[in-house]
Image (cartoon, rainbow, N blue to C red; front, side):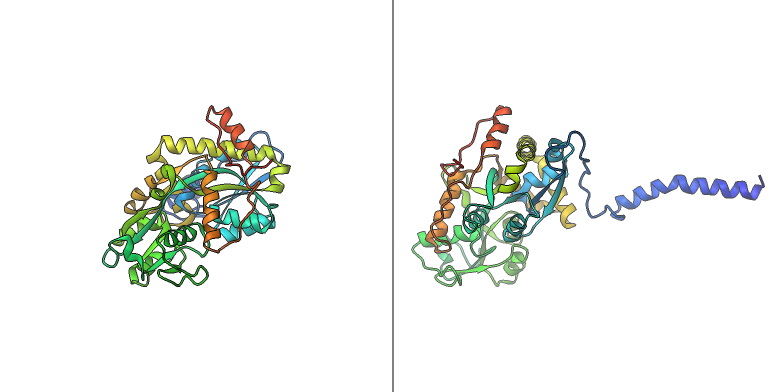
Length: 369
């Protein structure tokens, strides 16, 4: 072989050997096709259940930590075996409910108010709540220069994420209990309730266009990092300092046709919750890594450190508190008296809990007969 050919061949082999190192370096710097999603890719392996896939919806929020961690770390996929988990993220309850009703979503993590509204509108035909996921994590944060006591809220502008959402209902109920008046549709009254997307609430607070906000984490801690003060933690308003903030819901059609898949997902969420509660610091880091993967940016330590411990991760749907929240929405004239009979089906969850040696949970009389 001529010398020039041997030299060319050696250079080619050296370049080929270096290529994987170069690709790895680029990937670690955030380049390449997988740079936007650093979740662990857990393959669907083992025996396939009754469905080829299960489509799971959730929000990129700390209050959806079970999903953030269960998906990212493969804890849910592991229980599904050969059935593939297909996660989808949403930014608002209505869009997730629309996906569930439209057949493009099977199971979802969502707040109590959207669950109630969707169940009532479909006359009890489209969804069931099959588990809890999180409690708490909601605070009233105010500008301390303008508001020093709860009585100072009168005449001020207080944000909630959306008309009729869980925090909006809670604030309207709190205002009513103070004896103040607010029109639930316009938000005008003794307190101006300003419906503002959580994404823009920090900017609105910083600019002074709102004086405070009744919001979930991590928005509450973002406001505190901007100089806000926590004036009220909603947990103090509830017996036992617990109230549902995130449920797991399922399409009734999917539940009927694929109970084995639903049971596998619940086994995954129960194991995820157990790991989260046993490893709070590692879980916080994992949830933040998932948020970075989904949104391109992790939460700053001054935001996630105070936010994380205020959220209680739980399998219990805290059904009695959902019933109370529905009563608040009725009192606020946001909905008519709902018939919530059958909104829960905790059969599979209680089966999973029993198998894990954990106590069963209650549907507060709102379960399927």
